[in-house]
Image (cartoon, rainbow over all chains, first blue to last red; front, side, top):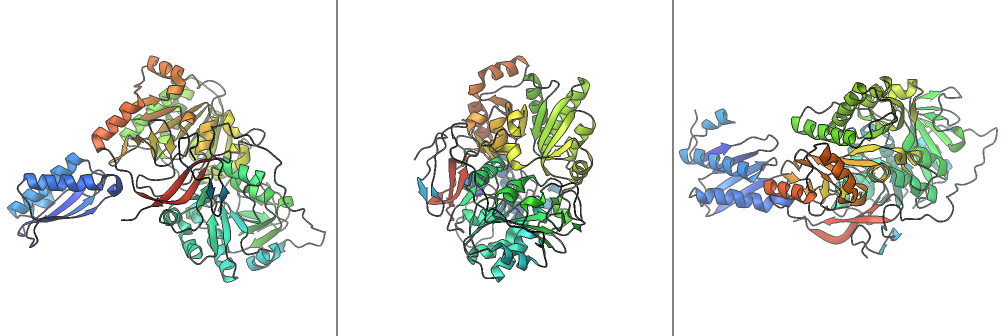
Length: 100
Length: 513
């Protein structure tokens, strides 16, 4: 398995899920989020809040997150973000393939 | 001003005129006489078959600023709208009002004619790209949306005065008899364009299948058609009719369908003479499937199935579960074949189907109708026009007509689509007012309109999972979170006309961030 420093991914593009990619090797301070979602108007702010809260709870304050949402609920978003973040922390993106 | 549906609508809109507020489902009392078209002049020597579309357009006397109409029976396979608009653009016409029965994604190419000023306004349903353009302020004049019955009413009453109707005709003779049954582009019923043929000042039929006079059977007769043009291809058959539509296999949707069927059964409508309309969506077909089983078990002979007809209803006709099908639009090959071959499968016009201001429309005879929604609110108002982001993406179809006419109007919808709650505090757009909606069936319970208290008791007695609509909404919000409403500008981009010609709601331009 290929090892990629500080990057992690989790989730799928299935309906009701979210595909989250997290890069912890960013120079900038803070969490920047690139969100694509079919529910961006009614729930965009809430999704971003959930992603940030999940990361902060894991002690992560600086990261780049690319999130491709397919209508996931908050519980799913938070689970995918946490998994992606833990993978990034353990630096083994190779894990991803099996868990998709 | 505030209308009876509780919506704030402007009193006047530039390019449309003064708006009449919605006053209640049957409160719009008609006045005056119906519109009369020009008295035609055709002699023994008149040649109605013209060599080209250009000749036909010139022969109609088309002028800048006139209203031209189209029908959508060729659906997403239609070549005629784009062909006519490309040509009138080339011929230098401007400021035309387009009155299609509906536009589809295939009509995306006409956006250039809107941007260049060839088309100034649209009165008709817009599905997909053209609606999106409208929502982002692409039109100077708002799109005027009407239901199938409402459009027929507007034409007959003269509210929508058509100068030239262009009719895509899958089969025609040189003297202007038309049908949709035969030819390479067969589409079945031509019901939506009958009012156009009868009331437009000039009527041009465009066909790719010219037969010897007289064509048989005749759907739209020669006495309404001025000119006939033969071209190579009016449409792409793969976009005109769909393959056989399948009953959903999603267990959640099957549960909704089963509950909807039980509502109809518990209401006591499934007796000899039962009549039913459903859409062509997966849940609708599944409801029909459950009802079909019940009718077979109990040996019930229904009277009619109506609306857009699918292979599923054709099968029920053949099994003797319905005596008759009333067909305004044939969705698949099997429906096209049945309309052609089975005398009990009857073509109906949009006016016969759903016009509230004629002497009786078919929706008034319906026992039950199954309809969808993009949103339902706690007042049972239904939105089918705008999505949760506020963008106009769908036409009205026969929604408000059948909802008002049928004895029992059932909305079937999952409580959530993706993360989007389908039951909300307030719909973004009122298409069918709450007083016309009896029951909302979701996988998490069945809400009954408080106006139908006796029905609620009946359904509870039958052991159905009845739930208050507010509880249903709260359940949706508990799962998804409370949705934020999109932001709109003050600019009105769409007017939702009720079937009687009053305005039930307006759609505003979406603010882009």
